[in-house]
Length: 478
Image (cartoon, rainbow, N blue to C red; front, side, top):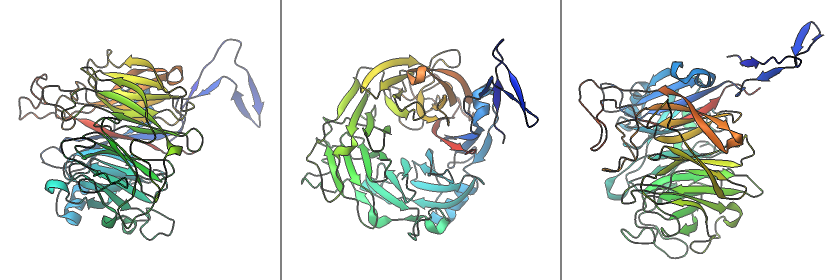
């Protein structure tokens, strides 16, 4: 692929000189996102005609920016080679692909299937699945893979086995030769490194989970976010509370180094973003709707320097989180988060699904500074979910939920119901203080055999399309 450029000519501002036979125009402005890149998005509804699989859509990033509605994706049926690999290696088919993330260097995609507990590793250049693992059976016989987060050092992947209430580890440099992802033999499920969140005890002598009551009533894992030093993993929980574990090494359950009650960190946080690496490094986490918590959008800020590594540990609820904002009235559900690292990491975006808004945090002051709506001519009900950033930070891409959501929806509330499933293109404005939905690449899965798959109280629809995971792969490193 070739880099695209825009020529802007202003009267009196264009001049040219001949150098070695080449004409150089000093009015030249690179395209907003000047590296070639792809946007991967996953429809978590079943592959057509099956009860498993799902569909991966791969877009040229510049095509999305220029005209999202006309962008033609490469379509990969996860009910094909990926499912065949899982069936051969685990004895079962993968169901409901929920998240997709790339390792450092973008050589491999890691796709987590929330309903069946499978994790697939795919070579990005060839779209070839090379390894399929299935997570362990945990609490009450359940197993899921809600999200699989690769460590920045490429040594391991942490999987949130949601209803199994397990934190699991996959080694991606199994021979420890410092060259990860060499092939399928490098990718090994480290079952000895499993932390059972239903039965463990913290170093402070407190039960990790106390079913139905504080401090942690339900330890179904929502999001395990790894810091950028590949040292600590922040584990958000369905019933609220937070556990921070030292995941540097495998071979044994990772030690807990910090714990929080659900009165301090509320339920169902999924978003996590780190600002900085050494100086003024902070971890931002959120909480949202789910279960009995039918409406909420909180954001917390935590100083990373205050967290120890094992064998040291903090007293409960230490350090105290800064509550950046707290929306607990009807109609809120915080989910995805985005920190624009190409714009001085100043502004943090938080998607609010039922409100159809993006909440904006100024990370220099840890304050909520703006709200902008995504409702416009492109969509009356976009239901924004997860974000990814274009290479130079001028655009972002957000997955938009469908009329028949398969995950995260609360009966009678319909917080995850959207009208226009697909990939939304957001233009970053004022350095990230605000933005705008400027286009949508629609992703539909219409089922003509049914009248409606929509939940009660939502508009009838037979469109099963339900887009959730998204990731950006850079192709041009020039």
